[in-house]
Length: 85
Image (cartoon, rainbow, N blue to C red; front, side, top):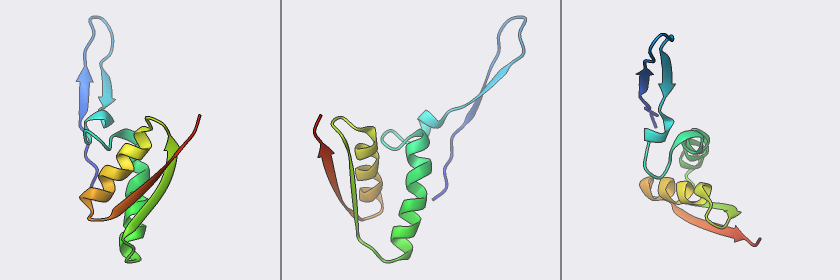
């Protein structure tokens, strides 16, 4: 589960260039820190022969979307519990 995110250079007049790591480009559904956290969970689940992920989060949670997408891509089932507000 290799994570690749490009590094872009941004140049400004009379300023030093800034390098930006584009974690938003890792995946359309599993980006940034969500992928970096989930990769270890997925490795553990797969290594232990498990077939189902269970998680919880708030309504409209990016974490829930990322977990569902990661599970689907790894042929795992996913159950998400959405907490009430």
